[in-house]
Amino acid sequence: MFEEEVSPQAAESVRRLVRELRDVYERGWQPADLVHASRRSKEPSEASLAATVILHEARHSGARDRAPESWVRQLDTLSEQYPASDVIAERAGESTDQAIALTAGLLFSDPYHSMYQITDLTSVWATLAPWSMLTPPPSAWLGLRTAGAHPDLLLDGKIGNKIRGLLAKAEATDFAEEAETFTAKAQELMTRYAIDTALLTSRAGTGPAAVASRRVHLENPYVKEKVHLLTEIGEPNRVRTVWFDKVAIATVVGTPVDLQQVDLLFTSLLVQATRAMQFADAAGRSGSRTTSFRKGFLAGFAGRIGQRLREADTRATVEAADAARIDVDDLLPILASTSEAVDAEFERLFPRTRKSRGRSVDADGWHAGRAAAEIAVLAPDEKARISS
Image (cartoon, rainbow, N blue to C red; front, side):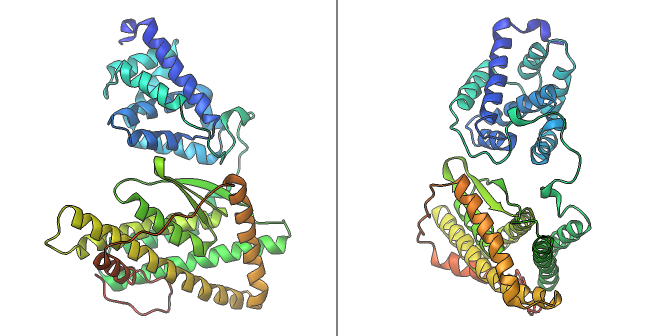
């Protein structure tokens, strides 16, 4: 509709932006990473600009038919989060001159973007440093994607739906005993499923467990406290975490089953921690005192959750060995081999890492957080406790 108003210079600027997008993909960045980074920009509409260009490029390159499943799921999520961007990308894809149509969509469709934003985002993408390749880049996609289940989809069947349903009920209920029962049952199902999968892999003699990686994008506020919770959940589940502070992105490494388990637990426990924190935040605090209390709360919550998950993992391992009619001493080497495979992949991806230093936190918040963590019952035989 406005294509006749697009100047050749504007269209060339958009072409450069698309070229930079393709180049940054080859340096290890993925669609969700780029939009997350744009959301942290001072320009509120930069995320929708990034989403529009990403969705347009995906249509132009046939990414949904060629990319790994994890990449396609990122594109699907962007289409849901930015429906206006999806419309612009679709219309541009139907035009005989896609660059002109995309430029018109960016400049004259709501949300509106300026040439300054386009050139600025081009510069940002051009300066992004290379990152670890978690999936093959577009240049390595050969032909159409092979049909079949992707490892990341192992829990998307009946068992996955049951686990998600239990955690959703735990988040929604206002009754502590119900929340604890739902969470306990979900943890039981996830732990047993992960161990059963490890046993099947071992008995099949297919070699070391498959290991995958995924990025977790964390939003303000309290991102460091949130990554602490993620790390505490990951450790007892044989998942290792590395944190990139400048972009607020964590990368987790583990088996596909364990990664999904950690993702589900993190999402659910973060909801429960946030709700408990709001109730526990005593009246009379304001400004920096509220911030200190909440940071301390999340730190205490994360630490106690980690302890309880380690205890639950020990119990579940013994129960799984008994159910499989094998000695627990025969099961432990199988789980150890999984940890060794995860460690090897982690070291390959991140040969130079350093442990973050602990920080002093608000004592009242820390103790309140540990108390709140007690409601997240993770073992089916524990008694219900009073909710905060």
